[in-house]
Length: 226
Image (cartoon, rainbow, N blue to C red; front, side, top):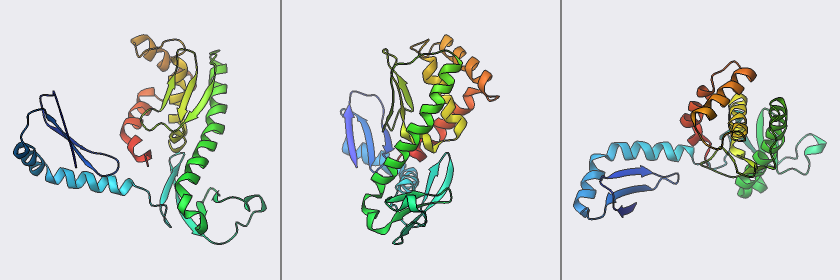
């Protein structure tokens, strides 16, 4: 548990992504008051910790991982993959399962990140080029990041960035984030004019309201952080 005191008016708490309880309190709050606050919220804390622990990946047999929001089980194997082009791969994805060699399990996290980054770079780059060309929007550079709290960003120099975690989301949601960042080439803010531009682009490309994808990201994004 971590207690953070500052010039704030109320007590609040949260369980971070490692399962640690973080309590924020006004500067002169007594230890007794904090303990009472924790006791009153004991059930919430335990439930939240369970949820967090369930999301922490152990990279074990049958554990599930997202790819375009479809779940695929992880298999660990000591056998050489059947396809010749897979012989030198430590992580294999065959559209049915992820397969990690048992000897590589200790670096499975790094292997998954490498896989997601590679696939995100390939897919998002193609869609970014297609959509930007459709609307005659010119960006400078494109990159894939490891960001955990930002889906994408667009800088004042017209560099566009996307987190590799987007490759775990539905295809249309990825398109929404691409449209969102491209719209920033016209409006470097989240003004009414910006959202009007996003809506116009989304309606032309897809028959879904952009708010569906915006809300989806808010609801499910924590599932993609590990």
